[in-house]
Image: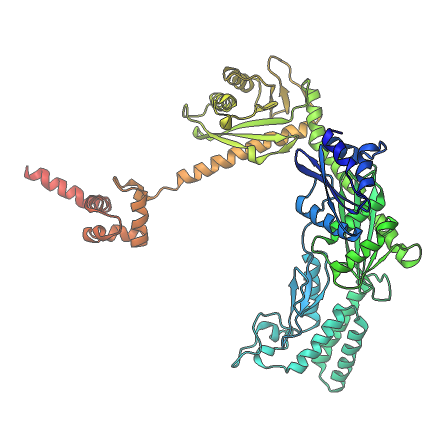
Length: 620
């Protein structure tokens, strides 16, 4: 605690407000408190801190406060400050996507179902949110099959007759654009869609069944068959959804799981009494924090990201002193009534337990995935360092490869792996300049000489970092040439070669090779670096070879550059037309002058030029 902090602690008021912890002028944490004096002092005078708080306090060299009239105002201000500054030690949700809704604008004479990314006060009816565009597409596809609403973007009603589209022909549209139905008939189908989206399947199925029986009684068997198929599709959709409650509830269910290091928050969505999906959000460094406070911070961040709360929010436990303020804040965000419930028994408690189970499973899957990723990257690098006898674990590993076709288009590649992962922005490619022909040893020598000279460039902006380890694709000979080039350039970093036949590792000055277990992550890492260097080199080589193989006949004309060639092609449209043009037409072409036109004409009529030369020689 420095003098600035000590002085500010003496002046803290007994008032609600927000505090901003800073390091070198940058805000690293934002919090709120009912009593700023007690809360802020506890950070610097208390000792029983969680690891996250202890780490944060160790970096704080200053703090600021903002006073508020009520705790609710402090909560709103905290949300705004976190969203604005995104401090490192606050819970920050990286998932900023907008969940899609299904929208119906009932003000239109013939409403259509559409996808919307935001719920706005525009007079339309919104249903959702749906968890991802895939879920929306499934619902929209079901609606197309069940209800023949239009999907076109025409502004109806239109003036004049219009030809029916394919959807009308196959029974997927009532054809309002061409006068095949009245507005009342169309509205009747819209009402069914609304009941369907509200989860009132029984009303929809009863109406369809009634129409089906009426059509059958009127001997309209094709219409009755279509209604029968619709009824079957709706019943099948109902059976695929698991009923959670029978009350048609709209709920967001929250839970949290912790493992002592990180945490995982789970949200499940109940709409119309049906479970429609859920999401899991990793919360790094929150594994030892108070679960109630973590859940509170998460809920605030979750709804402050353009999400609309459900009518009822369920969560397993929150600090008592903030429940009322959170409820009031949720109501403001929703713009309507919200009930915040901490269920103790019954169906709602079962929902929170299910959310907790999902949170634990998501956390276990994330940890397992991170463990596999660690073993493939950092763990593999550590094992590689042990295998080749390095004292320190290399962070930056560079791999090199040469590519050419019978000595033509000789190129090389440099790929970079940082902490066991490819860093494509660090990749470089080279064209061999010092010689022509197939000589991989000389090519590797040139490439490494050029690369390591960049480590000692005079201008700092032109200077490249030294690698911690270099991989050469090849055996002892290639390794020897590469190491000589590096030493002559003034650098000396660990280097090894990988021979393809047995995947042997060769080290400088060591005759016998090293064989690593074929199931070892270290060997897999080396192979990935080698294969990536080969891919990068051969891709560059193929590109150059493709350009070299594409040769325009116009390039053989002396004195006609690329701009004139381009202008000729744009004017005459083809090489054939250029050859057939007379001298006067060539002179009139854009960008041409008399000498250039004569050169093109002479190229297009070589026989005529030879005859003229022969005639001239004969007269001498």
